[in-house]
Image 1: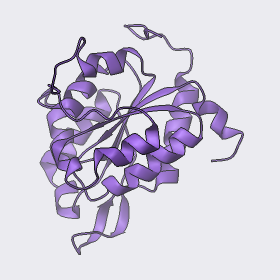
Image 2 (image 1 turned 120 degrees about the vertical axis):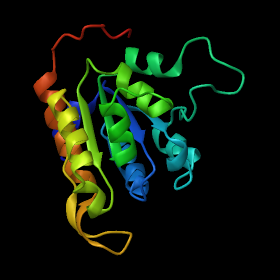
Image 3 (image 1 turned 180 degrees about the vertical axis):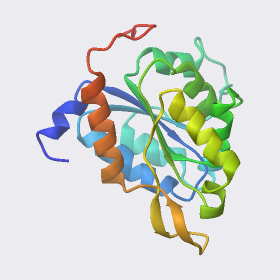
Length: 201
């Protein structure tokens, strides 16, 4: 991103959902660059994602609390996923696994990321799939991706190349710069559009 383009991220609140793909390590760079560009970044992580990258990494990079559980120890005055959505401008899921894509496409919210995504339906939603090529080409996964796109989600298509599992094919999460460019373009295109539920800033 250039210095000029970074202005698109200033005073913008972005939820970054991280699910359980080895590409979760790229999400750390993504969060870092969004923060450097001026965005207020709030990370939500599935349990599988936490097996790959620790929440403290994202806490250090975003300088915000990282949300990992729908029912945090000690409770909360307000549901985390609703509070996050009330104050956000955009949600990005990167990496988006076949599991998370399928749950959201089916309207299932059984952990912090999927429930947040379901609550965020009236804001720009972007997802960057990351999975084995055999999974990405599975007709069921293709159907779920189409369902999200038909619902207004923007897919940042994965790249072709060597995958962590040893396969070569399409399924590697898009480059961080590619995802950032899509986020920036989406923010510019949707600036000023009214949400059904206004932000509570």
